[in-house]
Image 1 (cartoon, rainbow, N blue to C red):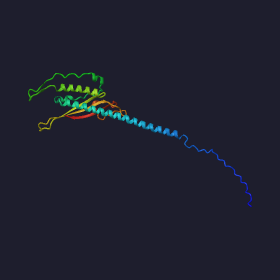
Image 2: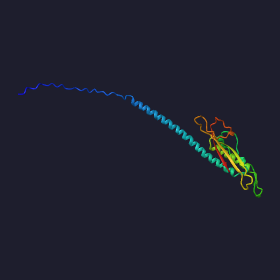
Image 3: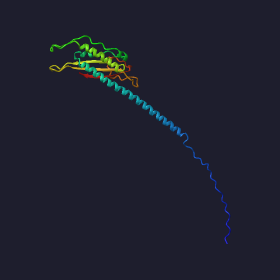
Length: 216
């Protein structure tokens, strides 16, 4: 006969549910937001600088296209008036033009002159200087109207044909500087490396120049 089993006392286990995980990310989200804001601000400042440069260079490209059109016009006028070629020079010191005055002031009519080709061996043409003065006055008005504060400085070169060469015309060259009010660079100066020294442009003047050399 088996002996009776001893009574076993089982104590119930208790578990504590208060298991806290240490918060090691406290404040991390705010720092990330601040860093993102700083990065975004730097990117925006960079884009602002690029936009400013793009606007400046687009304006310069537009001015250059306008300048090419003006120079082509003046060259055609001079080519059509070989007799008055020397009078197409304009070497007045720089003085920024007024767009209003240039728009409202009409070009004076040419003075009376004579062209007579009835004798081919001895043609008469006294209109060279008169037509050149008219062309120059009208052209400078167009420059002032199409370029902000625009004016010009023009010199002429006449190189005769080499001796002993028959039938070769003289070489005529126009040196044209277009001058206008420009956007200043970051250092406070405009681009003046192409401006003619004889135009007496101050180093502090907010101007820019384009140079063209045209052979007729």
